[in-house]
Image (cartoon, rainbow, N blue to C red; front, side, top):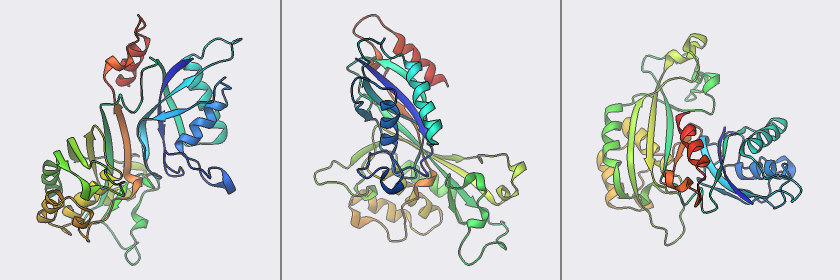
Length: 315
């Protein structure tokens, strides 16, 4: 039996998140990332039932440029062991046939001690904001709906935000949030006894860009894109989306820095300001899961996993 690390990307719009659901496929219900990957691996006909361990859970509607998982696969005695390339090609062929919005980018043979979740040293997320410019033509918008301003290429790929939006305040708030804090105010539902202290290694806001060339879509002239990037070893449930919601509320002057300091100094769900909302999942992307190179070292001279992971990081 061999253990493999798979790096996968997916568009989360039509998926039910990462975690496997008990009613998947019943009455046409959408599937999870876990469920789809499991079905694809079963399609390779391993001798053992594949048991997946995914590094990072993402909610329904959240996308991933790179999520990771490990799985042990064994072939029948009459067949040679699985090779990484065979798994990548076979799983993606299954996704093509089933029209699933998920792809395996790389498969690597890793040591039997490797764990996709516990060996991870960090995770990086990106949140894309599309801010409506103050000078935007709003004549095509009805009532308070601004859906007419969303370029079709950005549908379910960003968070449309109204002006005013003070990006300098957002940058100042990022500096406050960076470091170690009790983020209980920024967490979704958590079980009793869960440690809500986390360390944000880095959180930045930088000018973003559209997914398509604006020359092909005049609606882009109404929008200014901003990218919020955040890195930490781990995050609380919905912590990133709630953090972005607070940053947007600050940028729009719906809440103050006093509100932000209260959220950090009195960590509690009761400290959540009523004028801040959790950012929607559509703008959130899991960019990368980080590992130390020693996690890929076999107890015997086999450096193929290390070499493959180094090449993967260059892509």
